[in-house]
Length: 349
Ligand code: NAD
Ligand code: WQD
Image (cartoon, rainbow, N blue to C red; front, side, top):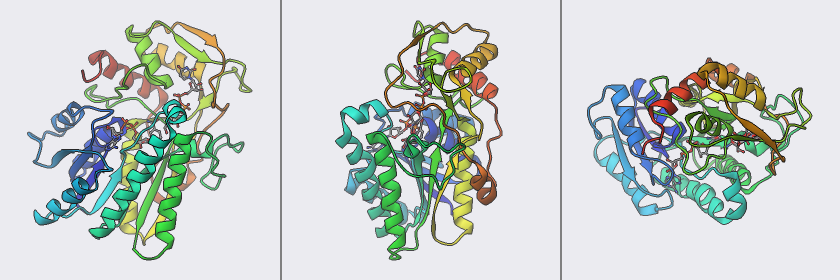
């Protein structure tokens, strides 16, 4: 396997993964509508990999994954150039829980229908290896901790439903036995941090929904204070616990998934990517304050609809099958995330 199509590769997790893949020797075509990202992330990825220009080992096609003919052309052109696409890493999609509640059909269309179109085209071109960005959100409010891959799939919002539906669609396609599909569904927990260079990182549009970018924007002065959504949860300090994983660990998980699929028989492999360790909101604030020497003012407000008390991964399957585990700490996520924020106070703008 040499040539990889990376849908959504200009985004937060995609750009970090592109860097890891280039360093591992792959050639990449990024297909991204840039609806939630900037091509600057990829220019920075090139800079970090010591590659002079777009087109050399990384090219960018701006387009929507629902655009059948454009995506079809990408596969055709690659074949004609003697560089057929061997595998796809599929990041492209929408990821806001709150938006999915107000605009559910958009999530069905982009996340579910978009993946169906991609899968159709892959099969047309005899490309059977796919790494899909799933999410721990599909477990909903699971009571078993740590959550293993065998836990019930019970999403509690349309975003989660869209990810669970794609997993189901991929399973159905695999079990049809019509194609020798090799699929990895990577169930990410809470991706945070940035590349240690400070050149690439997370650049949310508008006011961030997620804890890490919000804390970071308070520290840089773009937001005045953090609102903590409830301190009356059934946890040791009353705030919810999550499994925060450094984005570079996550990026490396994609390389391990590709290696795993390459070495193994056709299958559908569903695996958690987390650290296996949970931290509360107060612990995150404290870690951030220690790492950055900044005070994070906060107030405690009502619980946010749809939140759960505790969520962290059982990581044994990833370790056993892919020899992957998270190596970086919460402290390095804070240091690296803050370096990115400090050097790019307005993101890529
Ligand atoms: P992101 O928004 O930074 O990246 C997604 C990329 O997809 C963006 O570059 C965006 O422009 C592109 N895109 C969106 N819709 C598109 C379309 N219709 N056609 C082509 N490109 C399109 O998000 P991210 O945090 O890097 O997440 C990547 C993937 O991982 C997503 O599928 C997301 O659902 C999933 N995920 C993210 C998290 C998280 O907390 N960040 C957690 C679990 C799963
Ligand atoms: C973490 C904790 C909040 C913001 C979300 C998606 C999930 C996945 C990852 C894509 C919670 C608290 C947050 C704030 C706060 N994404 N918080 N004040 O909710 O675990 O997961 O991102 O797949 O689908 O739901 O992450 O970072 O939003 O919240 O108190 O301003 O921080 O209540 O306890 P979450 P998060």
